[in-house]
Amino acid sequence: MPNGNTLDRDPPYGWLMVFVVFILSALSFGALGAISVFLKPLAAEFGWGRAETSLGYTAIAFSSALFGILWGYVADRWGSRWFGVA
Image 1 (tube, rainbow, N blue to C red):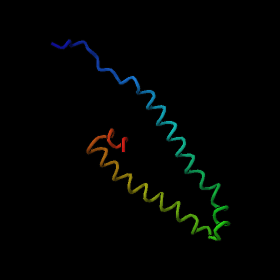
Image 2: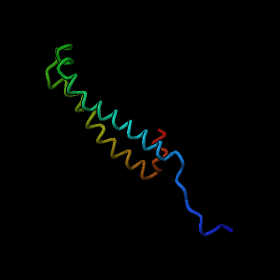
Image 3: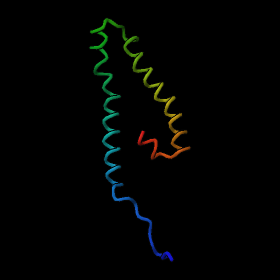
């Protein structure tokens, strides 16, 4: 018979996961800001205008927003553990 005084414990690696997610978020945020550093050199290298150079970044931003909605639904439906593994 189970004891009523038992506590559910968090997994011992919980803080490790928080740290890993923090580092990955910091790195991805840095990658988003790096476009401002590389915009002029890319335009000069390929002979593109500012609009053509920015189009790639804009396409990635919009596709991330659209797929974020899809992945949010998938995480709600099947759980975030499988979402993280993929």
